[in-house]
Image (cartoon, rainbow, N blue to C red; front, top):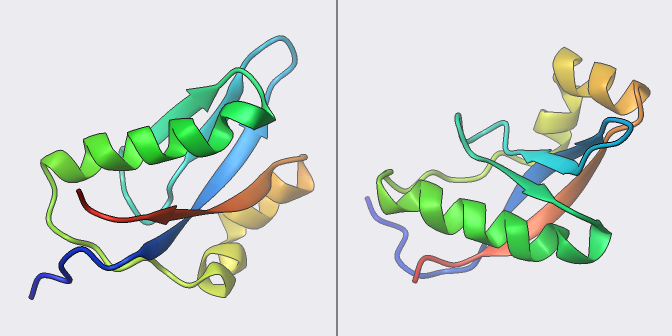
Amino acid sequence: MSVGKEMRCYTAIVHKDEGSALGLTFLDLPGCFAAADGWADVQRAAVEALDLWFEDAEDVEPEALDVIRARPEVQAQIAAGATSVTVPWRRR
């Protein structure tokens, strides 16, 4: 069943290694990732990554934030300084 063009919110985990750009990964969308030079660019980069990922993918319902944050790998990333952001997205 296609969910059409309704707005959905996906969660990205944002991390930064010293001397690098911000890295974004969408754990409920395998292979969907982005990079941003600064926090002002995170939303744009995230939406572009979602647009590209969904060009070749079926509709995927986003996982709830509490489900994503309960994952051990996410807890480890957050303990190491990563954070999560919610990215509103609508299929174009």
